[in-house]
Picture 1 (tube, rainbow, N blue to C red):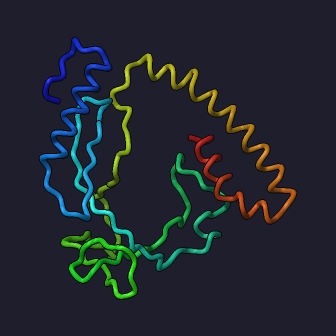
Picture 2: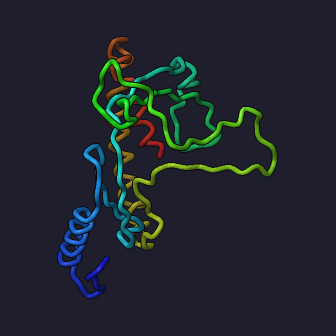
Length: 196
């Protein structure tokens, strides 16, 4: 970031960064249906500008039954292999110009400029594999003291709180089928965070 120096105190540094972000946003031309996001990566050592388009007409077109999506009640993201079919299929709809718009009955399915091909033939040893996603945050550059803080202080406190939350939820979910249904998703989310 321009104008940021190692000798700055955090408040000064953030002020310069905020001003740089504002200048960058104002200099970036966008369409009415686009948004600009500037996000820090690598503990604030790099910043990236994203121009996003928000499609508001997104329709659910398919999902597996919950007994397949949550096979064996294992909603765990933190162990491998995972035996779940937890996916949903959505279709994005756009206006006649293929641009984001509000819901309307005459919207049409969105046609992307490019898309990834799905290989229905299976994989072989040595085939290229790509895992992709948007890294909401990374802790790759945390100093050792910050890792110690997480492992010895933060995580044990979070586990203790979640133990108590799960115990209370479980008590009421076992007592009433309607509450079990209402809280199933919340329980799975807290349980998932507890396991992490």
